[in-house]
Length: 448
Image 1 (cartoon, rainbow, N blue to C red):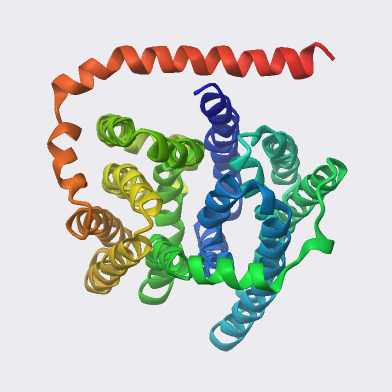
Image 2 (cartoon, rainbow, N blue to C red; image 1 turned 60 degrees about the vertical axis):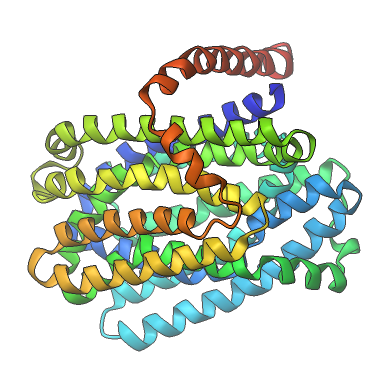
């Protein structure tokens, strides 16, 4: 528990920095460049995210699991994963370039913005070091350079806003931030004595790919129904509508950081707990689901009533439809929080295909509703499609659960009495997290 909460603390630092500093910085950029240019940038982000998800190959979760279970193979696992990811990243970059050349050749802004953004796919190959430090519960080693450079570049971007920077200036700055971040992490990894290029194994590559391919398609499908609405808005509506929707979605989706932090921090511990005590493992999943349900419901209610004011404060009068879109889109947080826990359970149980089938169902519903609603409702229709598709994903995971345990946990998940009983546990856990986080800072940094 000490390691888990210390790990969570550093992950939370990263996510909170992006939640608050990142949101304000992006809002300033959006107000500066306007909804049309902001829509074009988000088109590039959506396209490269979808294609780039193929380059992840589903290895993010598998690598953590393999390093935890087989520490003697860790050098070979990391080196082989980096090789696969880098090759896949180059192919994904070329794919993005081909798509934008075929569809947006008439618009230089679309073309340049997408190609520069697609370079990030190659750099994201170095996320493999994140997997390594997650498995070791030493994620602070990558969080520190990430947060430091993120905040630094936020300041630089704000300076560019005041000096009338263009859209392409901000796109290049985002690339430079990622490049310097991963160079710093690579130097740290090699400085600690870890081997890299000398332990690449084709046998290891084959083993990892055979175990990760169902998760690869799951990851692609998740990105599709997260980002497909933005591509469809650009196609069926206009860049302005896309800009308004993207502005609202950024506020809503930033809350997704909370279940992601918890899932990342808990994965190594849950894998070990399942091997030691099945009853305690199931109780942990139950408590996680309950916390996810009530926390996400509270967020949705509060944000619904404050959506108009929040959107206007951040984006001003240039994004008039963002408040209404946000009041609908925020309700996707409930199924997102729950699906994160449910799909993590299936991952630990080895039921990778369940997550794949659930994501397929969600994507199909998302695309159909978007096509039906976007022409008449624009961003509001896309927000409705997002909420419904996430509900379909979570429901499908439960229905396809071969263990039969998730269905039994649902009544306990929504129980107010059990939620109140968890309060003391949560307070104690937060106190432990705070004490451990502060102790790490004192011992490792302030004392120096």
